[in-house]
Image (cartoon, rainbow over all chains, first blue to last red; front, top):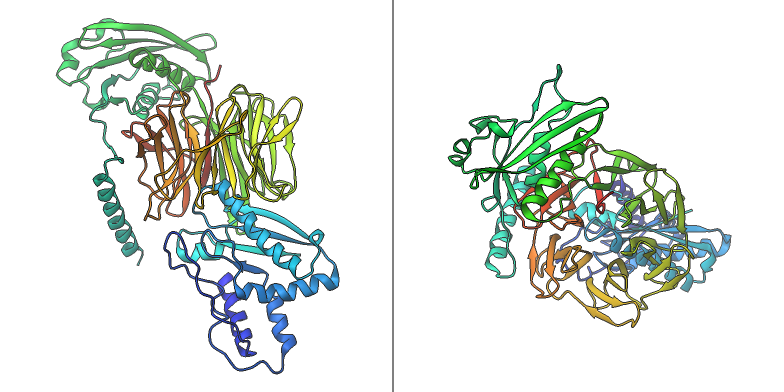
Length: 167
Length: 432
C-alpha cells in the first residue's frame, strides 16, 4: 500500500514539473543495493515550475513518511522538500506532531531503538532549523518493532527505515 | 522465483560455511558424536490411564539439549528395565551405551513419585538411586528435577533444566493491530503463561537474580517505559518514564540496581539506578549510541557503543570510569551477555564482508571468537545459568523463532510454541 501511495505521489509531483535532484545512495556498510521508496519522485521531469505551485505543495504536504539508507540517519533531499512544507504549516498553526523513528529488522533491537531515535532527531533538527519550536515536536522511536512491511527483503527493509510524522 | 531464492540462499550459506571453516578462529560443529551415550528407558507406570507427560522423553530431551549427552533411541533398546535389578550390562554394552537411567512412577495421595536409578555400564553398577515427587500437575517439574540431578551427578555441573524462560510473542492481525504478549514458560518452551498483554510493543524482558522480579520495556502508554514486575503476584512498578528512550534494563548481580538506557540528555546513554532509593547516575558520556548494558560484576558494565564508528562491545568500570573496547573482530558486535563464570561473552556478531548476523562467543581471557549459529538475522542471545546452553531469536520463513543451542555447538532445536512470532528470550537464574 505504501508503494502505491508513493507511486501516485510520484506521478503527481512529476506532473507539475518539479525539479528535484536524484539522490545518490549513501554508503551502506553491508553493500546492499537497497530499493529507495523515495526514488520515484526525483526522476524525470525537468521543465520549470510555472503554475500549480499550491498543488505541488499539497503533494509534498501529503508526504509524511521519510525514508533512510541502511544504518544512516541522513535526510534525503526529497524528504527535506516535504519537510519545508510541514515546517511552514507547523509555524503557521502551532500544533504538536509526533515524529516516529523506525528501522529495518537487521541488527539488535535496542541498538535499533537508538537508531530510530537518531532518525527522528534528524527530522526534528531539520524542522527546528526551519523555525519550528522544539516544543511542537515529540520524538518516539519504535526501532524495528513496528515494521510498515513484513518481510526480510531489500524492498521491505527500505520501506521500514523511516520516520513518520503523525498529527 | 521463491525456490530460486531458496537455492541461492542455500548456495550462499554453503559458501559462507566453507569460508568460515577455512578460518582458524571460527568453528561450526554439528552432530553428537562426542556426546556421552545414555539410555533413558521409558519409566514404569501401573496406572489405569497413561500419564499426561512422558517424563523419560522430557529427560532425554533435556540431556540432549545440553550438548553433552546423546540419548539412545528407545525403539532400539533391547530391554526396558524399570528397577535396578532389571538392568543387565550385556543389554547396553553391545549398544555402546555408557549410562542407563531407569525408573518407576507411582501415584501418591497428592500427586506422583518417581524412583529412579542411574546405572554405569562400564562399572556395571548403580551409581545413583533417588526419589523425586511432585503434585498432580508437576510431572514436568519431576522430569526436570530428575534431569538436573542426573546431569550434575555425571558432569559435575549444576543442572539448569528446572529454569524458566521469558519471551515476547507478537500476533499480527494487521499493520495497526498487533497483540504483544510477555510469555513465561519452562526453559524448553513448555507450559507458557501470559504475564502481560498489550497492543503496543513489549521489549527486553530480563530476569532478576532473585528469580522473583523481571524488568522489561513496555510501550503501553505509546512511549517506552521500564517496569519491574513480580512474576508470582503480578504486581508491577514503573521505574522510568523519561522523555526519549527508556530501554535495555539489566539487573546488577546483587539485584539491587538496574542499568538501562535513557536519551533524556540528547542521545542514548547508560544509567544505573539504585532500586530502593531510586537514585540514578549516568555512566556513559559520549555522543555516539551507548546501549545494551550488562553486568560483568557489581562494579563493571559491558555495553554496545558505536563510538568507534560501528557497534562494538566496551567494558566500563563504575568506580574509575575507565573504558576498554573488548571486540575487534567483525564489523558489528552487539547485545553481549556473559556466562556466569564471566569468562565467555556471547553476542550478536557480523563478520567483515558479510551481511548476516550470527551469535558468537568470545573467550574473554584469550580473545578467540567462535561463531555458534548458522541461521540468519540471529539476535538476543540469552545464556542458561550453568552456561551449557543458550537460546537466541532468529527468523525463519518470515516469522521470529527461538532456537536453543548448546554452547559446545553439538545440539540445536527450535523452541516449540503456539504463537507465530517470537522474540527477545531471557533465561531465568536458578530458581529456588
